[in-house]
Structures are given as structure tokens and as C-alpha cells.
Amino acid sequence: QNGYHISLGALTGSGMFIGCVVAGAVIFTAEGVNCRGALVRDVCMLMVTVLVVAYALWQGSIGPHAITLFFSLYLAFVLIVLIADIYHRTVVLPRIARQNQAMERQRQLEEGQRAQEAAGMALDDVAREHSERVGGDGGGVAMSSDEMDANSTNPFDDNYQEPKQKPIKRAINTVLAALSNYDKNEGATGTSSREAGGWGVESDDVLHERPIVLHGANGVLNRHNHHNPTTGQINLEESEMSDLSGQSLSPYRVLEDSMDQVCVAPDGTSYSAHNWFGALHDAKQELYAHAQETWADIVDNDESNKLDKFLLICELPFTFSRKITVPIPCEGYYCRALVALSMFLSSFWVGLYVWVQHETNLFWHKGFSYVGLMAIPTSIIAMLMLRYAPGGEGNLTLLVSAPIALYGFVMAATWIDTVADHLVAVLDFFGILFRIPGSIMGLTILAWGNSMGDLSADVTMARKGLANMAMTACFAGPVFNILIGLGMGFSTLSSITGEADTQVTPTASTIVGIVFNVINTAMLIIAGVFVNKGRIPKSYGYAAVTLYVVYVVTCVWLTLA
Image (tube, rainbow, N blue to C red):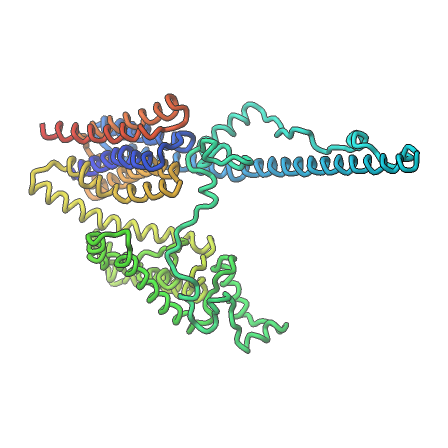
């Protein structure tokens, strides 16, 4: 029941590590980042989150009201970001497109006017030469360029201006643009978003950044005889040629075509299996190719040293277990056969998870198999995926991939819960063995372990030119961890103990963590917004890392003292 000490230590410690060390590494890598819009929004949200948690702890107990407050606060944050982004996409982007079109029309008109002036000058010269030869005045054949300018009409103003907006609407536009994940100068002609001092996640990055594709070419994964990996064309059998010659299609064929349209994204780069036999053949080939790629990513990766490769090989059984139970339909990680297999085996994993974590046997409970009942829809979905989902590097349509991704998120959460439960047990064991307080174990070892992934991913994004995206992740991630982590944690604790309210006594390290998180967020806003006018300089990274060192030393000293 006192495990919340480790949780609070880990949450505040990881918030400080990510907000100071990881953010500092991103600033070092990018040699300074912009501090506007989305980043300010997320930093302020982290400050509010920490203060709300501090208030709840100061009350001495965490009950239904505090848990509801945690969930509601994060939901409000998500809605603000979502509404701002939707507004940007539906209102701001079309307005920018209209401005660009008007500017392009104006440019074309100016080019036409210059062409008319050049033609008029040429006609004047020809008329003058002709009049000199015949001794006349040219008979008014040619019109001077000045006359052409006077007679030409301009359907556009010389300087295009967007219609003026009312002050209230203009203020709403400004606020929503600042809260969205885009830069305010998006779409400006001749000006890059980075030069314009972007607003959080750069719009160019959002529009053009794509997931890294780990799979091979289509020809590698699609070796069956009805798909040509070189041309991407399907070789139709003789029985199908009659369908193309104008004969009526059977209802079954119409149903198959409809399923293809539902599952396969209209990118023209991949196709579903031709028949059930081809689907099974493709599944075997794709699983084999995916296994080879996974092994090559471990042993042939030049960026991994020998220790990393050894640890990854030791982790391989757990990696294999996660892959075959968590469906991932996302681009860059999508494998049709693996998604189908993980959908089929996910029901068995749920039964094992509930049995191990909650001591309830869903395989056979009171004369009924809940796992068997769950296996029916998952098996049907798995079969449909094999038959109608795109193979190779093709993509699922959003209508199909979104619910599968949501289901995969739930499966991944069960894995996280299982691993975290055993990890906390191990930390408790070593804490008791070496007489180290749980809060110290949480803010150091557990916080560092949880943040290593953020450090690697954010620094990599900064190296790719996505520094603002990495910075927003440094502060939006802890918001989710603190609010959802504490909310779900205390909800689970309440269901286990049967008590609505849980008495809490924050330790010295927890109080110090809250204070330093507030100091860190305040320092970043002051340095980025007020002192450097929308820019966080590279030198701030040193101050952030120094603040984290002071935080760790203070926590350890107060706890041991």
C-alpha cells in the first residue's frame, strides 16, 4: 500500500530527468530551440499538473475526487490540443491556401502586364521604323505601352490583403494558433518555418515527416505467382478475365472487391491476397522475412555495441512474445501476417495476464471459457486480415487500422502493467536488501530506466531537425505519466483495498521533486519567452543539467539525513 512512494518518486524524478537532462541534450544537439506556442503550452501544463498533484497530496488523502480531477485535467488538455489542431487544419490552412492562390494570381497578372508592356514597346518601335520609311506617322496602327497600361484592367488590387477580421475573432485565431502544434508562419511564401521562429512542432515536419519503414521491398514479401513485385501489377487468372470483358460479377466477387476497398489504402503500391491459399502462402513468407529482419536489426546493427547486442539477444524471447500478442498496424511497423497472428493470440495473452496479475482463471471460470469466447471474434478478424489486408509495404485504411491500433494499445498496456509490477517488486527487493528508501529508488533507478527511451528518441529527432517536436515531447510526456499514472494507480489501489480514500504522506524527496519541477518549468518559460524573446539558447542546456544535479543531491541528502 505504501508503493505510491516509489511511484511518486519515479514520476517526479522522471519529470525532472526528462525536463532537464533530456531537454538539455535536445538543446545541445539543436544548438537552441524556439520557445513559442506548443512548447509553452506543454510546459505550462506540466507546471499546472505538478501543482494540482501537490495540492492533492497536501490534503492528506487521494480519493475519488482527486482521481477524477487527474483524469479530467488530462482530458481537458487533450481536448484543447485537439480543438486547436482541428481549427488549424479546417480554418487556418484553407485561409493560407486562399492567400497563396491570390498571391499566385497577382504574380501571373503582373507577369502578363510586363509582357503587354514589352509587346507595346516592340510595336512602337516597329511603327516608328515604318513611319520613317514611308514618311508618315504610322497611321495609328500601334498603341503605345502607356496607352495599353491605361486601357488594361486589373481584377486584383496591387497589394492583396486578407479581409479584416473582428477583434474577438482575431484574438480567438491567435490563441488557437498558439495552442496548436503548428508554426504561425506556416505556408508563408519564401520563408521557412524555422527561419520564421516556428510555433512548437514545425508544420513542415508534421506534413512531410513519415515513419521509418523497416520492411523490405514489395518483391521480397510478395513472392506468390499472382503478384509481380517488379511492376506491382496483379496477374489475373483466365477465370477472371471474363469479369473484365463485361460479364456480370458474382455476389461473392463483389463482396471480395468491397472488402479490398475497405482494407487496402488507395495508394496503388500493394494488394490483398488473391485467394485463401495465397493468403496462407504470403503469411508464411512474411513471417519468415520479418523474423530475418528482426534478427538482422539485432546482430547486424552497426550502431549497437557488443553489450547492446548481447542484451537484445537475451531480451529476444520477451520481444517475440510481445510481437505475437500486440497487433501494430502502423506504417513502418506493419506486417500483415504478424498483425493477424497477434490478433489471434491476443485473447490467450489476456487470459494469461488476468490469471497471473489478478488470480482469475478466464480459461475456465465457473464452467465457462471466457478466453474461448474472446477467441472467436479475434480469430475471425485475424482470418480477414490475412485474406483482405494489403501485403508488403502497403497500408491499411484508417477505418481498419484505427480500431486495431486502439486494441493493440490495450494489449500493450497489459504488458506494461505486467513488466512494471515485476520491476517494482525487484526495486523493493534491492531497496530492502541495501536499505535504500523506496522514494530514492524511484527517483533514481526507476526514473532513469523509464527515461532512457525518451532520451534516445528525442535526441534522434533533434538530429533530424525536429527539435521543437522533441522539446514538446519532453514536457507533454510527463503530463500523461503523472495524471494518468497516479489516477490509474490510486484507482487500482482503491479497488484492491476496498477503501475509497487512500491516506498519503509525501516524503521529503517527493516534496523536493515537486518544487524543482515547478522551478524548472518556470525557468524555461522565463528564459525562453521573456529573456530571449521566443528562443531557448544553447547555454540554457547547461543550466538545466545543473538544476537536475542539484535536485538529485538535495533529495538524497534530505532522505538520508
